[in-house]
Length: 225
Image 1 (spheres, one colour):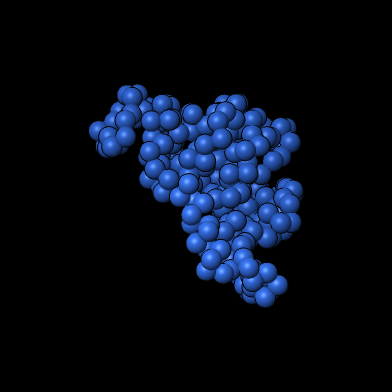
Image 2 (cartoon, rainbow, N blue to C red):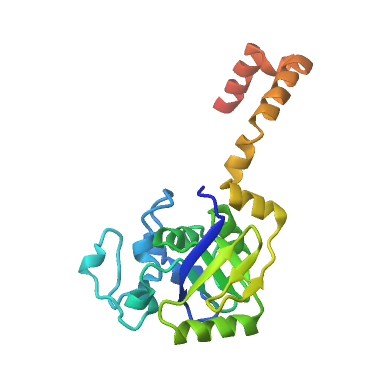
C-alpha cells in the first residue's frame, strides 16, 4: 500500500447526499478482485449517457457533459468533496477500488458510511470528517474558484486551505500509523514476522504433537471426508 503523508490535490465536488456504492461502481462491473481497472466505470451511470457493459471501451461511450468528473476544470482531481452519508448501501470494496483507480486519495465530508469508511482506510485512502457548516464553505469555495486545491497533512492532522488557514481533523492513532507507513492488514502482520516465527518455534517445543507427520496425515484424512 502506498504511504499517505502529504497530499496537495485538486478538489472535485460531488453535490449529492447519500451516494451509495451501486452509484460508485454498478454491479455489472464487479467481475474482478484485482483492485485495478475500475476507474473508467466510477459513477458509470452518471458519467455516461449510454449504458455501460464490461469490456466496452470508454472511447465508444457518450460522456455526460453535465457531470463534474467530465468537466475539464476537475481533470486530475485527487480530493473529493462529499455530502452526508457518502458510500452507503452495500459493503462492496470495489467502490473504494474504483475511486482509488480513478486517482482519488482523500475525501472530505460531514459523514461516511461505516463499512465504506473502513474500506477506504484498508486501501490507503483518507476519509476526513468535518462539520457540515465547514463542508458547506468548502463547496462554495470550490465552486467559486477554478483549480481549487487543498493540502492534506496527515502527520499534523491538518487540512490547509487556499487562503492559508487550516482545519484540524481527527484520525485514530493506529489508523494514522498504518497510512503513513503504507501498511494494510497483511503489512501489519508481516511487520511482526519475527515474533510470529518465534511463537511457532516455541509451539513446536511445547506442543510437538501438533507438528508430527501422523498429525498431518490425520488432518489430510479429515479434509478428505
